[in-house]
Length: 91
Ligand SMILES: C[C@H](O)[C@H](O)[C@H]1CNC2=NC(N)=NC(=O)C2=N1
Image 1 (cartoon, rainbow, N blue to C red):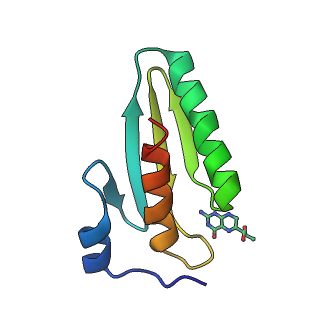
Image 2 (cartoon, helix red, strand yellow):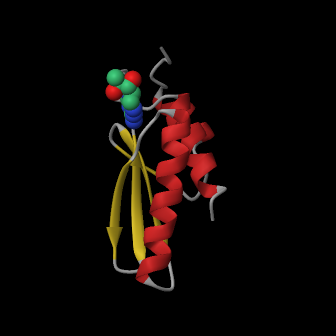
Image 3 (cartoon, rainbow, N blue to C red):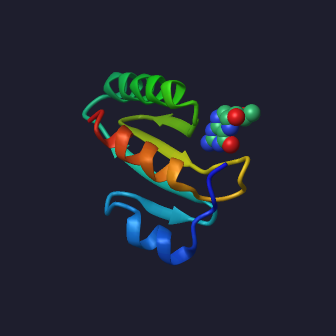
């Protein structure tokens, strides 16, 4: 079971594209059209299933919001930071 990271650890490791929101990290990805965002959300879902660590994904017109937290641990862990990097590789 991964440990919940301290505020300093999250701050130090979170890549610039992501923000912290309480016990979650969040990024809003923007796209040129709706279906591009839908396809991206599906790719994120595939990675999440492979890693068995699942984000909250909100698909909006020309944007997709992805939120990550480690529910079992009750906060942000290395798993969340790792998934964020993997999702960014899908771009
Ligand atoms: C039983 C528990 O739901 C599973 O072990 C996995 C599934 N996906 C998960 N995803 C996230 N974000 N946090 C979890 O704690 C988590 N747990």
